[in-house]
Length: 165
Figure: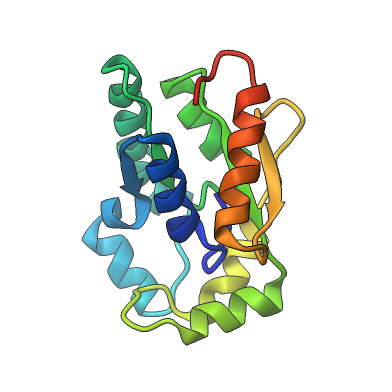
């Protein structure tokens, strides 16, 4: 989880490979209307995000029922969004990729072909709620090397009861 440009897709893919688990790119699940709204420079609101979050929660629920687990790259900016995932699977564990605003702006402005424009990064920071003590997970510096983040994450997962890596 994290704001746009924090490296969710890169780290998520690497982590899924390392864990030999399925990977879901949350951006691929956004309805066309959400993509169009963001591309037009308008931030999503909770109502826009709801169907998207429910689709991700369904994937999480199915992954647990199938016994395969998985890794999802998703902004999951608010506590209530993450609660939706925890309702789908009480064993959900979060990796928060923390990134300063200037770096996020720079990264998003520098990527090509993505529907999320740099001018919307501020709206994500406005919505962002860091992990709370009741949310299982780890917060890391998103400017660290992605492979180092993955290794730190795997070590943290091994210490988390109920999860296997």
